[in-house]
Amino acid sequence: MAVTRTRQPLVTPALPVRSRLAHPVLLLTGILLVALNMRACLAAISPMVGEIQQTFGLSSTASGLITTVPVLFQGLGAPLTPRLTRRFGTERVVLGAVLVLGAGVLLRVLPSIAALYGGCVVIGVAIAVLNVSLPGLVKREFPAKAATMTGVYSTTMLVGATLAAGISVPLEKALGGGWQASLGAWSVLALVAAVAWLPQVLRSRQERGVVAAAPAGRPIDGIWRSPLAWRISLFMGISSLLVYTLVAWLPTILADHGMDRGEAGLVFAFSNLVQVAGAFLVPLAAGRMTRQRGLAVAMAGLNAMGIAVLLLAPVSGAWVSAAVLGVAQGGSLGLALAFIVLRTSSAAGAAQLGGMTQAVGYLVAAAGPVGAGALHQLTGSWTTPLVLLLVLAGVAAVAGWGAGRNRTL
Image 1 (tube, rainbow, N blue to C red):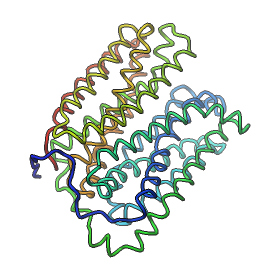
Image 2: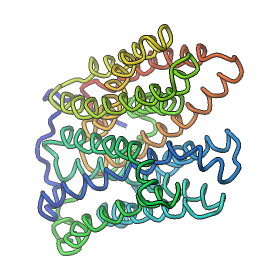
Image 3: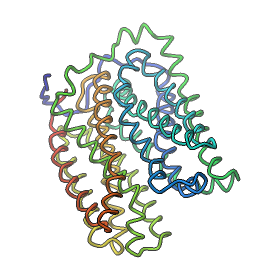
Image 4: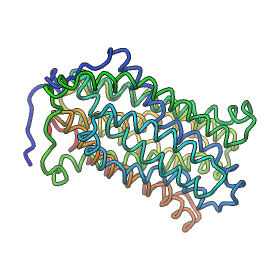
């Protein structure tokens, strides 16, 4: 498979692939509402895990699977999406995925352990489809501003996650229906996103001739044999592993070193808030660069710095670590998504690369929380897991250096 070198900055010129569907404001509104759903239903469950554990009498391992299963199925479902978009069209696939996501949210709150985990599976697959569909859609509809738009929707995902984590408990109290009512309420957000997305589906049916005259481009031949695609996938995978591992264990690490659990929760929330800035600014910077090698290494370096502070001064340096990790984690997510649109020359290629990188990425990420917990249980300390995360940050730097080269698939 040929990898071509380009000489121009990677702000992709307008390509003759834009379908000009519904009004740009409606399109942007639809994308943002879809993006709000893509992390909110995952983040909303974290404050509820203790109550769910009590309701069903789950062990700690079984409770951990509530957050691990959706991540795992994001990886398993990602490779299927390019076929779906080629057969049914991106607009209909996105609509279907949002509706399935809402159904998964409702399934998860039914009074059954099977329904709980079944809902987690459905949610993971639906998010996988959206994860892969949106980069191709952005590449097609905003070809000259693909990196900027990637930053906008990746920021919106994190905003949704932050809001969900913050209001789940107040929502439970306001609705008065326990954790089931709080978690089930997020299906309403999915329904709102589906309604907002409907104009895209209706217009795509009306303008089939336009879409047919402006194909999304040919798929990339031999993508699974491409070193560049694997570097991007590895950068995505390790970056996601670092995020999900610390999402799962950061408050516990701080509390185990003597920090009050309330303050540990505030530190964690602050880190999530800072991620929003990184997720917006880093893709914006990436789109203005010919090469993103230095940016990728900087994100990996900040991850390593934040982990090192957590390792050496877990309590006294907690707020500094949270700030650094927030920038690094949000920026790494945004940059990994930006690589998908910057390293491809067509919407079809972006969808295909997105399927590969997110399949690899989320399968790798799913091992992080479980692996860190197992190492902690084995050694009785958080030192070994954190040292391993430091090593992985170095691997991410190497992968990011290769992914940031001025080449396209």
